[in-house]
Image (cartoon, rainbow, N blue to C red; front, side, top):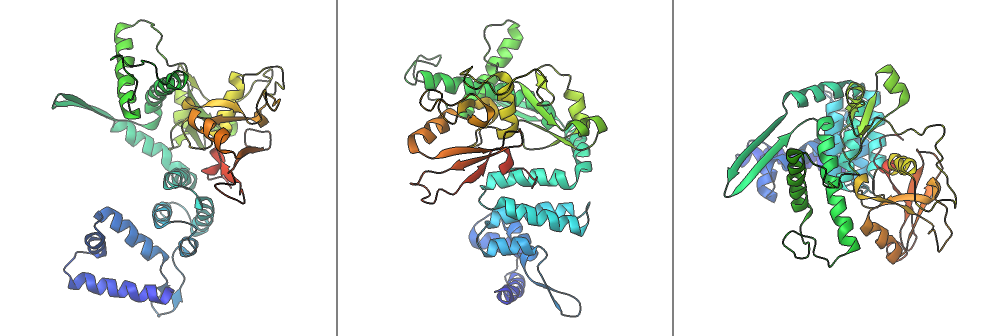
Length: 395
């Protein structure tokens, strides 16, 4: 199989020149009808996973043998392999070969079974993990090139905002909190008149976001307090205590994939509406047992730390609620972290209607959440890792 791939590469190079294409990427793009960018990614993947030879003609293993083996055995798709290869290639400029090998093995293992969007989140964390010193310069560049452009065309106003992740976090949190409020209203009264036009609300998420931005700006312009639904718009910045004290390492913001530097974390820690780290005070009780039915704010923050959002579909924390795994009434389930999980409304109903189960491994904020699919989906009911641990680079 590998010898065939080597012959195929030589044949592709010859055919490229014969057909008058600049490189193999343009040839592939023309052949399969894709963009040259996508074709270039496939070409880089092929080169990184094909056998090599040295100047003496001795055969060498592939540049990334773990990626090659995972693709060959169907454990990851080519698109996921391309993302991993691109991340590792970039990291080679900053770390040694041993670190690259360690990262390749870990990424291939973690990427198996993930969606492409989840793999993107995984490699984003991996890039910061491999080169933490590169995060702060990237933030400075993003801040230096921030912009908001506006123009009108065909009766519409176009806005194009580009800013660094930390500065954009409050914007995203406020808008997503508004979206969550709209969806909650739909759930409570799916046939009610919830739009200004007096009809049933059939707006898409993109439409609701646009309306949210308009309403938020109107509220600021009028400077009144007429019930703006932003109660869930708290920005949570997570950082290890040692890293915060030493000024090293990385921090993360809920609802965003790109890690931030500890320097940026320190700068925004004092901002209004920002919780700089999810820690529980000595007097805070996280396990209420049967004394309270609803999860407390402290418990919810701990669940956000563990789950990162809806454990089934990945919606951000602002669009979820804390639910009992074992029902409060039917199963006499306690209001404890080990019995709590973040779910959006749709996934909450789906897991109850279709069967399946959720299990929590451990009782700390680093506990792992496992989704047990119903037998109709997986007769063996193989547990699937979920929550923040699913796309975390930590082993």
